Length: 291
Image (tube, rainbow, N blue to C red; front, side, top):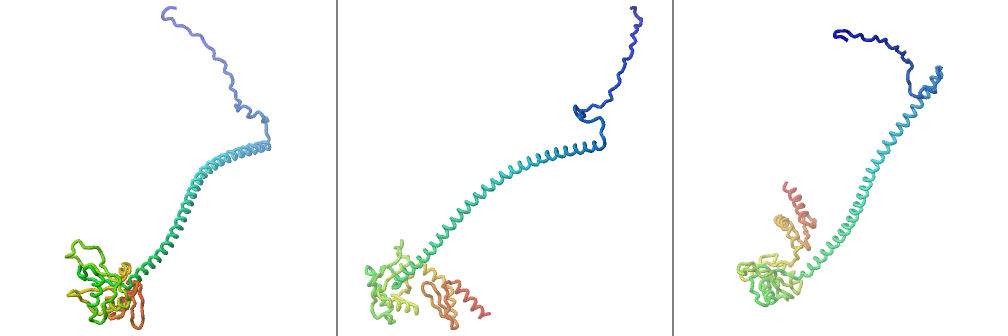
């Protein structure tokens, strides 16, 4: 073929196009059981059947879903209920422990009340064992030498004999000083002397006399008191303030064992077991008179 000569391409005749298939495709077997034509009644029946089938399937699916969710919730709440049950059981055991503890404490309180009554009885017995005792304060040390019984008996006669309280030296069962020896006896306060009188009437006469006037012994002032136990002395000391007020107000009173204040006022006899009650009565009575 010479240069420049055009090559003729062969003429192609168009292939004959086949006609397209106008039939609609459908899933296999979807219309296999359907007739070629349906009446309206048959169509409605078919729709109802499909609707019932779909409804049943939906109900079954919903029921399964609800059942599964309910089962999961029940399992979850069941574990929570088990935890609460265990907690309640623990609280119940604790309450039982508390109840048994309260019962034990109640028994202890009962025993404590019994002990208080026993203590009061012991205090009363101790007080009665001291009923014949008197305490003598401010007597210089070493004046009694080695014979305290003879010294105290002569001392009482010397102090109370001139006033007629004692006609002879009283008989003593015991006499001694109280407390430990001081480190520096020269500047220390003299230790109290305590003596037990054989005759209770001598003790009463001595105490009545010391309430009337001051007592002196060889140039020094002395004091004589009943021998009280510490608990009673402390309780009696609480009445000191109201006693001073009653004395200044010229109201008759007496402090009796163990620590009970008796007051006579306006023809009435009043008894107070505590200083607070007595002070409250005094304030209400005399403040009303002054207002």
